[in-house]
Length: 280
Image: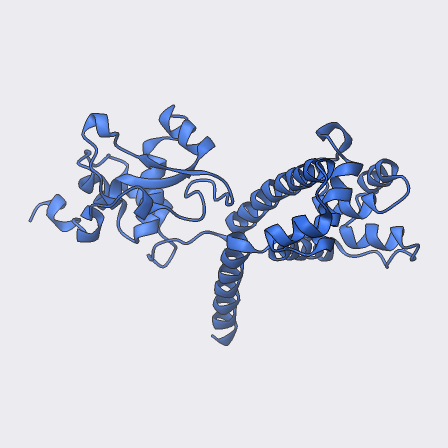
């Protein structure tokens, strides 16, 4: 039996449409809540087939990088191997590309220490969460701008809320945050939209957000300062990181929709995995 015969995995050869391969996140960078495109690793012009092994779901930016060869084909092949839980060489065989000499090195990238297909690390999940939150912050300011336009046209906050299935408070929250920070120059990129919302409720939002940046306040710390409450006892470094992660998670869950559902599912997996480890 030849090497190619040994690594043939039937489901890799399943013919699928681009829509069937669509996922809720970019398979390369992990970002969610953006526009996605299906990339052919071996281009159709070069004879690339419309099968699972040859298709990967990418965001617009990663798709451009893949087409420009900034993201190398072998990187995408490793991603596909992880997704399909198959050897990397099986993907090469499926798309009819020669198996490279460094295949063992590529296999290590796709497998965990126990030899099973490697899932994303906690760091990768956190990076995905951060990118998702950054994109969500941009969308929140955009929502505020659109709401401001509708209000200028004579529509009320309650009417807008009814049209999008949200509360009037939700509409007002986005509107006052946008009005306080209407352009990128007035915003602090390193602070979240929630920071900006808290600052927008004060008499001098710009001054408040600048102070939050200088003092590196968490949203909890900023909220306490705005309410005139004394600062909490200084937290240890790990507590600060944990609190920030918790705030980020809560922000995504508050936003709802597909990103929130995906995040809950992945967090449940992590909790279950850690529970199994503790039980051993």
